[in-house]
Image (cartoon, rainbow, N blue to C red; front, top):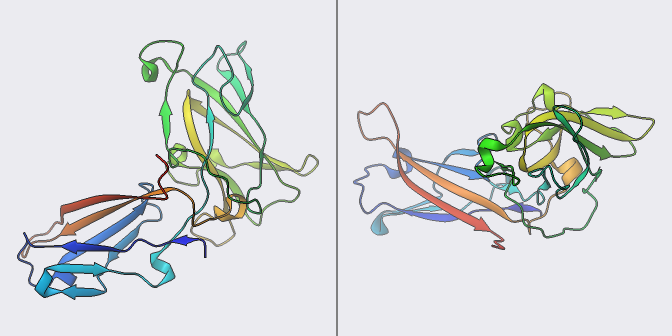
Length: 248
């Protein structure tokens, strides 16, 4: 079992709820993503005497694949090659940066490493005010695999707004048995995955190239919404973060 399950209790002592199981809506996110968030979760049990809603999930649709720690590269300096940067052509503008070649991790054993859960940070370490002084570069990604995936392959993460964008789509080179992609990014430290979109599928398949493990470190957050009687909008009345397999 490679999924991760988040169970929690919600106490409502300070809210005079008449029908709490219907008036309260809960959203559960993995790594602050909205594209795969679990929406409108309902409690399994309502403990009226304790003013407590118990959210315990046994159905797979309410769990998340643990996935893998994110791949990463560090392009915050022009003076030296950062982590997972193979080459950088400083003689052209914009600069051309080629990352080290990636491999399919789906069949590998889990390896622990610190990441930032799919996000990125702009930066240029050669000057002050890192984010403002960061330049834009062309970044080339390479994914080696002996056969093409059963669908289109994309570079995926917060850098793509968690979407399968056309400009992040990769091209397969059968002669060299690898996918390549080239995107325009501001200097920084980036996390990313490779995602597959099979024909007819609506959600990206990250497991195909990344694998999935329940020992992966992930950040979950719980958003609690309440709609008062007669109101047309929901109020955010509760928020909690839960770090699973924390190593920080």
